[in-house]
Length: 333
Image (cartoon, rainbow, N blue to C red; front, top):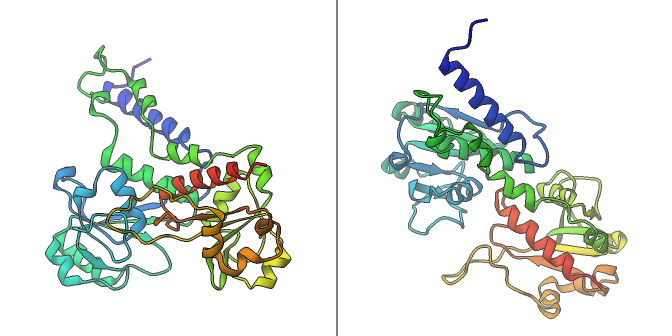
C-alpha cells in the first residue's frame, strides 16, 4: 500500500483536529447553516495592516474582545463598547460614505438582518478591494459561531503547531491544538444550566421596558438564554416581543422578573461591572410593576440587568448570564 504524501497527511490531520476542537467548544451544535460570509478581496494583509469598518455594535464588541480594537477605523452610531476616538460612520443603512472612503478600510463588517447591505457599499467594496464580512446573529448558536469564526480567521492557531515542511519534527505536537480554547467555550460555560437554584426562580418574566411593559418572548435570544440556564419562562408562546399592561402581568403572576435596563455610560463607568441595587432602588426604577399583587413583587424576586451591552446579540450575553445566575442565587430563602 502506498502512503499518502507528507503534506496530504498533515492537512488531513489538521482538518480533523480543527473539527474536533470546534465540536467540543459549545454545548449545542448550530442547527442553522454557516453564519458567516465574506465577499470581495481575499485576505492577504496581516492583522497589523487590516483596517476594519464595523457596522454592527455586536461585532464591534466581538472584535474588541479578540484584541482587534486597534484595527477598527470606523464604528456604528449605536456602538458603546469601542473607544470614543474611533470615528462614527453611521448605521447599517445611513452611512457617511465620504467618511467611509476617507477611512480607507480593508474590511467591512455587517450584521445580517432583514435590511440588505446598500448596493453602493458593494460597489465601493468591489472598486476598492474591500472585503465584506456578514454574520447572522439571531440565536445563541449564531453568536457562538460568529465569534469562533472571527477567531479562526483573524487569530488562528499558534504557528508553532503548523510545520508543513517538517511533519516529523519532534518539537511539533499536533495534539496541542486540543489545548486551544475557542471563544465559544466561555459562552458555553456561562450558558450552562444553573441547576437546583433555577427551581427557586420558578416562572420568570423577561422585560426590556417597564413603561409600557415590554416582554421578550419565545424565539428571542434572551428567552433562549433562559432555556439554556434551565429557567422556566413565564411566557411560553407568542411573539418574540410582546407589549403588556398591568392586567397582563397580574394574569401571568410571574414568580420572578428580570428586567433589562441598560444604563448610560459615563467617563468613570466600566462595562461589565454591575451596580448593586437594593429593593428600594429596584422598586423606584420599576414604578407600578413593583407594587402589583404578583409573587415576584411580593417576594422581592426582581432583578435589573443594567449592563450597557445587555441587549446586544453578542458575547456580552456571557456577562448577562453571570448576572442572572447571581440574582437567582441571591433569591434563596
